[in-house]
Length: 173
Length: 80
Image (cartoon, rainbow over all chains, first blue to last red; front, side, top):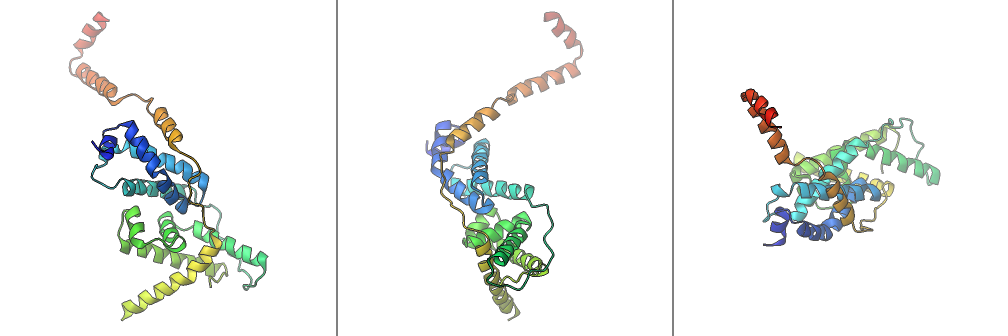
């Protein structure tokens, strides 16, 4: 019986081997989304626990890594939903962009804040596509959706960001 | 033609927002710093303390039998 079959039958040794093989990938994927190493570690442990709990649903001829990554993505999206910043976006217009470090820092903070306030699904798509520059098909597979749907989410995220930043007087150029 | 223009504009918009985003949101280290297996094992042990499904099934079937044949409760109590 191969490793994945043994895992699907609930053998803890097989699961340990899979954890050691895939924990780095799951962590790397999660930390790209949540941008916080401590949170990403917790979510990786939770992902692996859920993977074990759902082992009966796993088909041994399937792709374990892709399946685990999808579970991790859903957990990361739930985390972002639960931890959205509550305070409203600063509406006061920023001064014209100058190479002043204080002004620059303020602009960066406004961009970060606007980004963190995006709906979780849009934020994840934008993070992976625009910041991490991952291929759309890889993102679509992890989100369990189509490439077209990912492009649409990125498009909507960009539109919302531009609108909010323009309200705050920040020009993204 | 319009589709082509829209696509071009979208790509332009993406580029326009990508650079400030990448400047504002710092890169993260994707290297895992420690082995998470001990944590996973602890979590598995902690959550397995619950009542197994077959105990719940036994309770459920007993309740169903007692509801269908209430006199069995007396017989059962007599043998306790």
